[in-house]
Each structure stands twice: as C-alpha cells, then as structure tokens.
Image 1 (cartoon, rainbow, N blue to C red):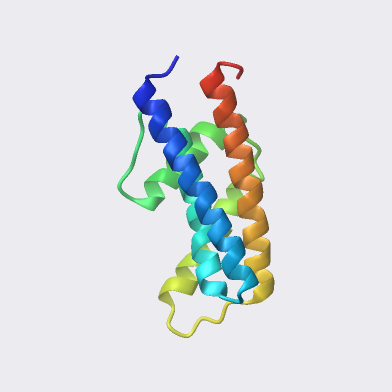
Image 2 (tube, rainbow, N blue to C red):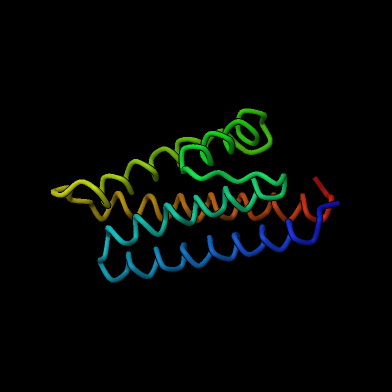
Length: 136
C-alpha cells in the first residue's frame, strides 16, 4: 500500500499529463505544431513522473526521469518496449522545435507524436491504476 501523499502526487501528475495531451491535440488542430510537440512531450514526461513518484523517486533533470523510467519499467518488461522510442522521439522533436531557431516541424511529425503521446499516457495511466489498487 502506498502513502496517501504519494498517491495524491502521482494522481496530480497524471492529471497534468492528460491536460498536456489535450493541449497538444487542440494545438495540433489549430496548426500550432511547435506547441503541440511541446505539450505532447510533456504529457509523456508527466506520465513518467507520476509513475516514478509512487516509489518516491523524482529527478531534477529530464534525462534522469527518462533514464530511471526506462530502467525500472521498460527494461524490466513491466511496460512494453515500444514506449522507449516514443520517449526518445518526443524528447528529440520537442528539443528541436523549442530550441533550434530555424527548425520547421511537419504536421505529420506532430500528428504521429500526439498519437504516440496518447498511447503512452493511456498505457502508463492503466498501469498506475493497477499499482495503486494493488492489482499489478
């Protein structure tokens, strides 16, 4: 059983992930591709943080969150391996879109990333629910 504080924070972070996903989908529809890429990445990032939180883990750097999530949940087979390239691709696309001055992001790239973020978020949320309820 997890402490109430850990469950509350994990739930809050998962809600934040879902809000980011909704923002990504809305921005994609409006043609704001850079913003959609950013928000879809943060849906993934906040999902990872929500799950790591149950074990009392948090990291100051994105690379720490990503590395620990892969180590604990993907490399162990708890979550499917196809989540790992989703993380990598979302991180790279968000960085290029946010920080490269002349990077032109394609609609297709953002559509794919937003779809992957929805899959990622749903997968993590389902597993998080199982862990909290003790059904894992």
